[in-house]
Length: 158
Image (cartoon, rainbow, N blue to C red; front, side, top):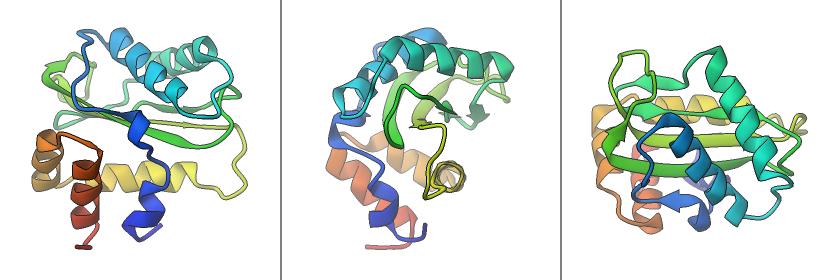
């Protein structure tokens, strides 16, 4: 997974939120599950939320620096999807640095994905948000095309 077009194929303009309304971790997860459900291939929103909540109980997916990457595999989805969402105020997410999360990448995948895309996608997102300049640019995106531009630039493309 090297170029931005291959990476961005997991995203969908319907799975973009410039501003989450949620103020809690559960609220953020529910709001992002609602976004995923706007796309195709979601069998059961409640099951998806339950899986994500259980995953968070194992350990927070708040990786620090204002970023959270909630993720998991579930029969509730047909194929791999990524939601991008932002909270300018920040949401307490039990992150490893105890700071609120502002940038969210929710990744959901079916239990088996033949192309083995789930873990490389998770790794690529974690790599993308390591740079402060990329996080700052993501905080400034207002729409889907802005997200595409930031991702392309962060992955070394124009």
